[in-house]
Length: 197
Image (cartoon, rainbow, N blue to C red; front, top):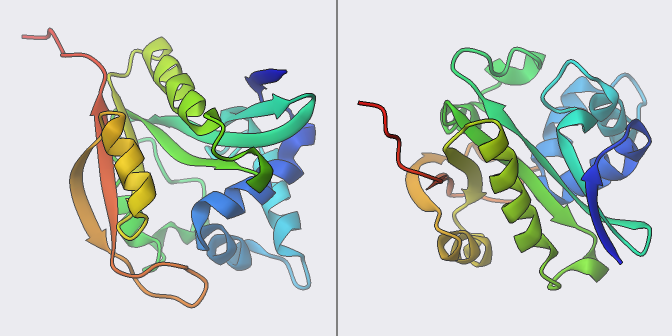
């Protein structure tokens, strides 16, 4: 049985594990900056997702369970004009700056989707993308946004098939923890035409 549900505080350890998979090194980079001396990287991630006053909170996560076992998660939240990014001290970091410049205001941002290996290629990722669309519509946001690395060709193909279009790209600041070079790409999907005059 497949069940999609809102995340709970007790899911934070697995959310952190899955977000590490989806971020291709960015989570490790950020969490290393936030770690206390000797703190394990996953403990940092779990601690971050336990917060309720941050966009990187379990409250912005959705979980999929297969037969009662967590199979994957999605982190997604609105980016509203002037509200974003005050919640981490690392926002001024030059390695992270390109991703901040790719934020699309007044969009519902799909920050990360990840599935544990054994649950991939079963359509669950597509179901998460459909769930994000529902969540955006409930919030009266007519755009979905996401950032993808340019050499992640499979993901780009999937997003294009789902109606996402490349809007702009930023050069990645290379770092040993980040698994990509080249560019990060902002992709947008417009959900409906605005009727405002």
